[in-house]
Structure formats: C-alpha cells, structure tokens
Amino acid sequence: MILEVLPLSEFLWKGINPKRSTYRKGVMALWELLVRRSLFVLMILLNWCLILTDRNLRTFSQNLSNRFPAKVDICSIDLNSLRKEQSLLAKMIILEDKFDAPEILAGVDLSYKESNCIVAYVALNFKTLEVLECSAIKHKVVFPYIPTFLAYREGPPILALLENLEKIDAFPDILMINGHGIAHPRFCGCASHIGILANIPTIGIASKFLYGMSSEIPLNEGSYCHVNYRGQRVGVTFLSKKGCKPIIISPGHLITLESCLKIAQQSLGGYKFPEPIRLAHKFAQEGKKSVCNITGSFNAHNGGFSR
Image (cartoon, rainbow, N blue to C red; front, top):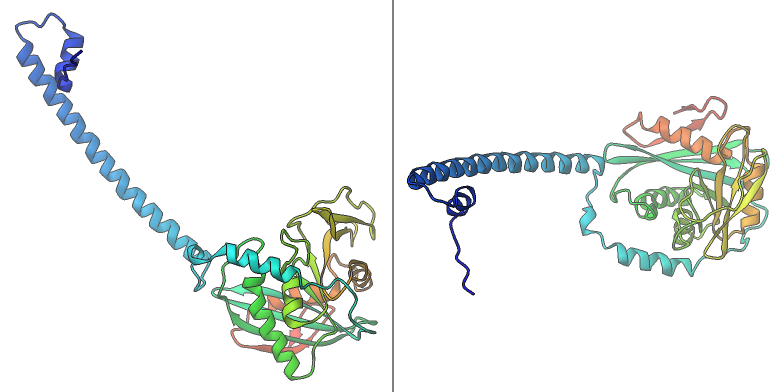
C-alpha cells in the first residue's frame, strides 16, 4: 500500500469539500494564507513566552543567590561524599560519660546577617547557672543551608570560636549546641560532628524533629518520651515548659542520653530551652547589630549584654 502525503491545506480541503468545486484553487490559496498567518502569530507568541521565561529564571536564580550568599555553589557540592563522611564520623561517636565533675556548662548558637554569621557563646556555672563568660565572633558563611548537612554550614564558625576559647583557657566541660546529635539520618548531626572534631562532650538541643519518631507525646511539664530511629534510641522529646512544644534532646559525643536529659532538666530557668542555649540565642540575635567581633558581659535577666 502506498500512502499519499498531502500538504496541510490539501488535506484540510479534501476533508471539508471532497467534491472539489471549481473554486478549489482560490479557496485553497485563501486557506493556505490563513494557515501561514496563524503559524506566524503562534511563532511570535512562543518567542515572547520564551523571553519571559528566561527573565523569570534569571530572577529566580538571583533570588536563590541572595538566599544562599555563599561561595560554594549548591550544584557543585558532592553530597554523596559528605554522606559517606558523616557515616564514617558516626562510627567514632562515643556515647559514654567522659567527664568528671563538670564545672562549666556552655551553649552556642548562630544568627545570620547577609553573608556573615554571628557565633555566640555563653558559659555558665554548672551548679548555680551563674553566667561566667560570654563571647561572640563574626564569621563568613561558606556553605549553604541543606537539611541534614548543618554541620558543614555552622561547624567551621563554631570551631573557630572554640579555638579562640582554648587560647584563653576558657574551654567548656560540656557544650550544648542548637542542633541534633545522633538523632540524624546517618547518626551524626551538628552536635556530634562538633563533639568529634573538638573532642568535647556535646548535647544536641533542637525544637523540631529531623529524623526519628516517638511513640508517645509528653503531656505533662517535665515528662519525656524516647525517640527511636532504625531500632536505636537516639534521643528524647522533653516537655520543658507547660504551654510550649517539646524540645528534642540527643547526645552528641562523649556523653550518654541519660546524662543529656538530666543536664537539660537541671539547666532550665523557667523557659522552654535550657539556659545555655536560650542565652546564647539571645546573645547571637544581639550580635547581629554589631559588625565587629563582640565580647562582653551578658545580663541573664533581660538578655542584653554590655561591651
């Protein structure tokens, strides 16, 4: 069988008028003109759509750059290699109490201002919760925010601050970090990552789940429920204050889950978060107003500080 391939106008004409009248050529010419004009208009519209789409993509790209004002390109990051690194670090985590009679309990938190971050540190007396020292530094943001990879964004600034503290012999005995410990898909959150690299007992304090689940929800102030992930107990949900949502506590490194919970309970000052994290957060927010390194005494009652 041989199929005859006809022009569009020929095909349409045969479908409309199979009898082919004497005016066939004139009607076909008119029809061809209409089809050509229609295609021309469609091409113009398509071209404008492509131009507008290109502008929108450029705007989106610009907004993305403003949101992540880092030197590292998101597309250039090899997340698979970072996942492998986290899995290797997880094998180095020690969930045992490697401290004796701690005297200094500290907290660290970050706030962001443009392409920089403010790393705030507040140290308290372990027994009385009296503020002993506070310090903050400004640090360049190098890594964008990617869930489960917070240590690569906040780790370098925190380590830089801890290095300064070590120089002045003000290293804490236990450090609370606003993030997760082993309650992480690869059992190595920011608190664990920092604990391994700095060789310090760390506790992860977070307001939201990252991974893991709890079979129950604590309903009474002071109550808690265990958080499990892949058959392992990785933390607790702790209702620290009535009327607030529970916080998630998980061990980072060189400390047990039981000790993390006990220390968090003892360091509450009537607020949702333990005092080291609460004061460090307030100090970090205040630090955003300064463009230089900040050191000074912190007022634990009103959350302010004097330089």
